[in-house]
Length: 185
Image (cartoon, rainbow, N blue to C red; front, side, top):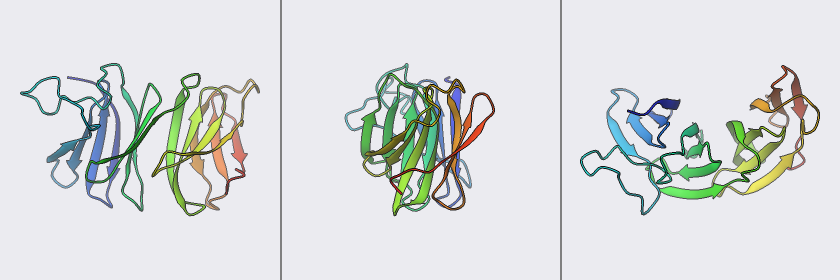
């Protein structure tokens, strides 16, 4: 049994998504816990015919899932693994987009913002002190901001959007909080 690495509940869509250390992403109904599906890239296979839950999103046992979230408007499910591979699935489990980000920096945190310049976006923080803004439906990189790069404050540990939907708030490893005004708004 693999270790559960992340969990996200969507009360709007009535589902729970869980990610594990072996790369599986399982979807269950919220009200009764009934298994719905495993998210899988097209052409993916099971490691065991007898166990249809033993499916890995990248076909790689070393791709533990580090982040799962739901688009509040679209219902898209965003999955990020420890190898910086991003996947976007429809609420029905269909793969919409996938992309592997630069491996020279590791994604340390993320959040989905539903009302950012008319798009749903993923805001990601990285171990090199950068913050990226990525459009959900096609995983296009809209902007990378060098928020704390070279400042000695350490990696970005958490990100969120301020109420004004114009300012990104980022928490740094040393406890500092910075406000960032992206140019792509």
